[in-house]
Image 1 (cartoon, helix red, strand yellow):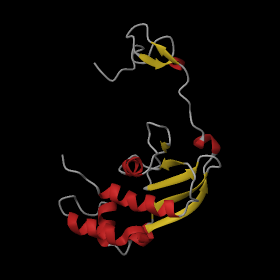
Image 2: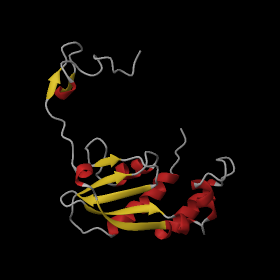
Image 3: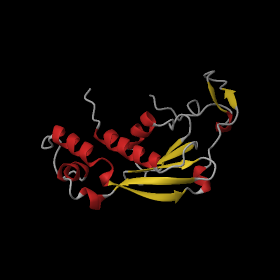
Image 4: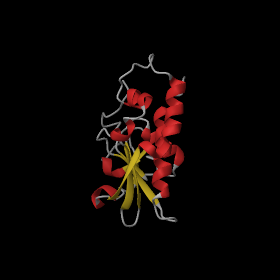
Length: 169
């Protein structure tokens, strides 16, 4: 397996930049606006994960993330600013898929991402909508009478898999 760190590297700069603009000592949740690469950076570099519920992916297809205060929903959104990317040809070609993977010079691209750092990132102060920020709690747990595995009781009398929603044949 070959590691493809480009989006994660870019995400690292975004997270670092956002953290500098947040008040110290707050507990944050995260929103990621894409399902590609950026969630990995958030999960690697912050305590926010999908598993603990501190990160939500709201896939609107933009390379952007927000870290926000769990208590008041005030936060900072970072995004890859395409106007600023204009002066970084390798990043532009990679991000906009103007060059095939074979045509890209990985070393040159990685160096350009490192050199550009937060210069290609823009920030916005935001307030997350309360219905989005609110965490869903798992609720009570039941034991399925068919497979005898634990599952969320809100799913019904038996687990979803035994109800036919299994990914397996």
